[in-house]
Amino acid sequence: MKKRTIQESILIVAVLALGLSFGVAAQGIEPPQELVQYVRDAKKAGIKEDQIQKNALSAGWPEGMVKAVLQAADASSKDNSGDKSEPSAARTGTDTAGVQASFDVPAGPGAGSPQAGSSPPSTGDAAPGAPTPGTPAREAGKTPAAGTLPGAAKPEPDRGASDDYQIGAGDVLLVSVWKEPDASAAGLVVRNDGKITMPLLRDVVVAGLTLRQAEKLITEQLSKYLTAPPDVVVMATAINSQKIYMIGAVKHEGPMQLTFRMNVLQALSEAGGLTDYAKKKKIYVLRNEGGREFRLPFDYTAVLKGTHMELNIVLRPGDTIVVPH
Image (cartoon, rainbow, N blue to C red):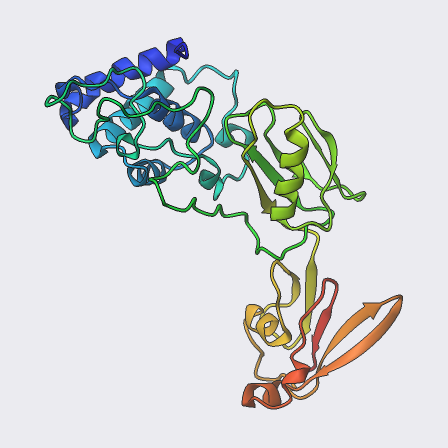
């Protein structure tokens, strides 16, 4: 049986005390250690409480127990506010938007696994949702496959860019490895040589890969150093490598991040549209290929009418859209 840390023990006692108001402790049910650990890890990662609660409820944990664990975690974090041994996302300034999907929520009591630290109830005295005798215990050292109820698909994390976005120099990445803080890292800037420097792995070439491909590569390399298969999520917290430029009679001139496949009409829309003085039939795209510059015409009026749609080309990084006055 896994030994509890002092912090986990204090948190469980606090949950039992707070659980009275939610009808949890009154039933003599000890909060499962897996749920306590999930809440602690998720709060350290900067995930909002409403999202933590939503994830836990989706996994099948009772609402009263989840609320009690959350309140106890708040009280515990206030008591330990002076501990800086493990910096939080808020303290380091890391953008953690969307990282909640990288944390698997342990399956709830209804998912067929016994609550940690509790013995199977006798027949006829089982609490609602508790496992019955004969339910196979989870194999040692293994976590729930998807962290959700049986048959439910694991939610896709928000990686900060589209699936076809390719990582480039200057981008800033966050690599989250579930339950492996020593292997996780934030604020990883992709250097001009296309590499990032990670704990355990040192230099990893990620330029030119999609975020999913980078996850697969890092997973394969980390598997050489970790006993359990790692669960890796790669997020783009800042995209600086792929830009296009808007010049002329548009409402918002200047550079624009090219984070997804965008055509000329979409780019003009992102720039706020044309001004009243724009020459709609004289718009063109400047593109550099192999050291040569090409001028690609775009007739705004014709494309809006649905004619000459071939002019509405997909933009590439470095393209400049010129809208004459």
